[in-house]
Length: 309
DNA sequence: GTCACATCGCACCACTGGAA
DNA sequence: TTCCAGTGGTGCGATGTGAC
Image 1 (cartoon, chains in turn red, green, purple):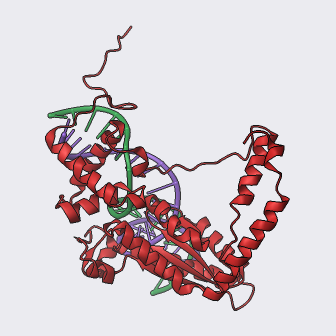
Image 2 (cartoon, chains in turn brown, yellow, purple):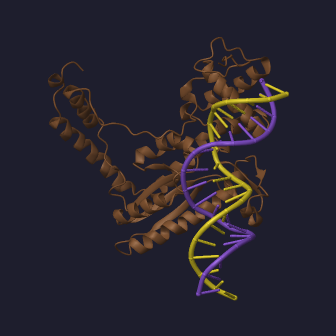
Image 3 (cartoon, chains in turn purple, yellow, blue):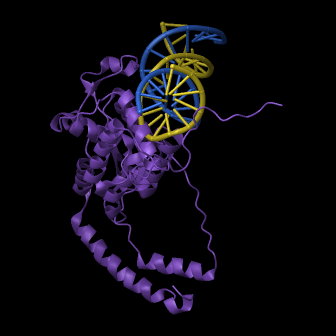
């Protein structure tokens, strides 16, 4: 019978108690903490965003090895409680939540909360339907915070490549029976631009084939990242990979979306949404929403009927 | 020569695990 | 602590293969 022996070094599991990084790592983590504090409002940041801010603000090496090193230390620092878990987003988890309740009172409380937080779909009466699609799934929470006020849904382009997702998008647009605008945020590189163009062509073809009438159309707007934004923000670029077949027709450098500071991305997106909004209609909807909320409040179960809340 | 289909290597991202 | 190779799922363009 073989004897199981402990390996020379065990991988970190759970929290790292008494985490004491060496001086060089400590300096790296301090820089990361500065970036996290600077953009506290935009948490959670992705590792890529922290990386690019460190490249820009602290002269950190812009290499894949340096990025890997940073990810490694950020993971340890979170296990070591030096950096809060909620500061960084690195998950790709898909969740199926259950619409189940502990008991009747829990259900009634839920209904009351829903009513109190009632929000109208502020896009429903607009002449144009909008959606935001982003290549980096980790940035969705930041983009959602901007788009939520306008009832603009945010999607990850992880599924943008999928034929099913493209058909579903076309179906949604046809069902809306009005103009649609897809605001896209992605890297400035041959693959990113090529995928954007092919998706735009594919969805447009589906919409044109299936639309109920000629007023239904779709426009794809590349909100970020553009060559102008790379230039205007003096972003760090890298040459296009020679191994990528699409690089042959590409001129100039490439740049990751995360190289743009979170506040700049938020401003760019908000400006793109605002440009399409009919403000008179928007204000009318806000007024109607308030009236709806009062009316719904009167229909909700009284707090005393739900036991202790 | 043309077409359809298959295959290949690549991109994306945040790790993970093993070795040094 | 650092480095390297690998993982997951999908679509891209380029190239190869076979049928007509």
